[in-house]
Image (cartoon, rainbow, N blue to C red; front, side, top):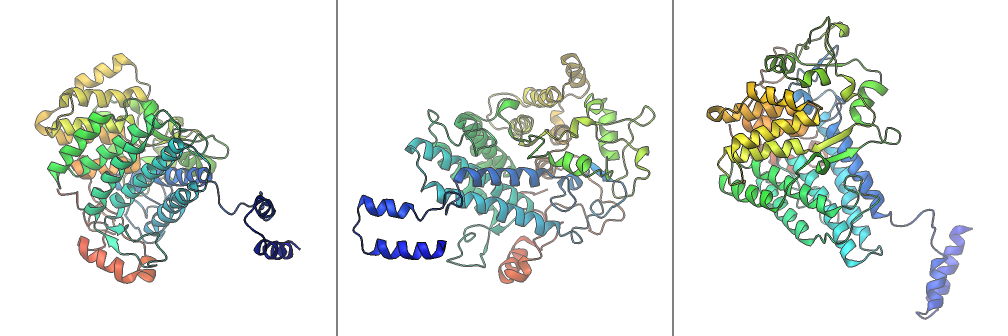
Length: 475
């Protein structure tokens, strides 16, 4: 009956002139419960959730960042700490989550936004939020895989087998896109107040995030293109980056509809699969780190880390993640004030003009992490006195402290440790690889659906292996 009424209505409309009567009749053909265009705010919210959850998840089926930085050891199942990335298809699963569930939703939201009623300023701000988020996800993909489908992606009318673009070319374009998006924002107006589950339409915070993302891109370029790195980093910092934890890019879970991924995988799933590694426990113990009390449980009065790459049984013999990480409402911090603080310290150590010295910014970065984790001011002073900045070996000094501070911040940690080569990770004896992973191999499905292009990309980067370094990972 519904189909017949549509046919009749279409026939009637064909015989009428373009009058208000025609518009009234056309409205009868609309189903308010099943709109032809999904609201862009719904699509944006979905993309933000998908990207946040799956960038941050400790699930062994996805990104495995925590194992690439050797901060988590496994208890009974050791495929992931022995760097088996084939059995569970992590490269495919993560690739699909970022492309299909995240960027595709953002692209569709941009299209649908055009049809929605907004003032010019609000529409510009909404588009800028979508654009900045899309750049963020692209950066994640490049930093995970290297060359990826970019310029021809999401253009089915042009090709269903997109080429893989050069990673550095993508990086340069992402920086330009951030500049354009920032320049389009009007802070006197709001953006998305509902679908924006990060900043809720606060465009000043979106600008700070965009500049901070620009800083992260710049620092990854430091050894590959020092000139571009320096100019981009200095511009980002001068324009205004994240300056407090309140500005951090974080997805806050409500504990009902949205569950923190660590809680979801450890508590809700009732899994006893992970323990902090010996490397984490021993490094922090040597520094007398007050964060240990916040983060880990003790065994007979001592912290005991698991052996990376081996089974660690029984579970009760080892330290576990404390309740600090096991809350359903913990936020996923994907670009935090702490990370930005360490990026600024590194920029100063490299001689960039960032408005302060490396030692001061190092102290500020360590303080940001300790404060974020509830450490008292007196204990912060004690920690800094014992673990002071070492200008002669600044990569180790900053690298190790950032690696600790960004515990449980997977990709952020992997970026810094690859770039600064500190701490040094040892390939476990039973590893299936010849070395510790420095990239994720391409999705196996791409070799079925887009073979010529993914094969060309593999050749271009020096081989589709987890041990093939990204273009910016020079040392």
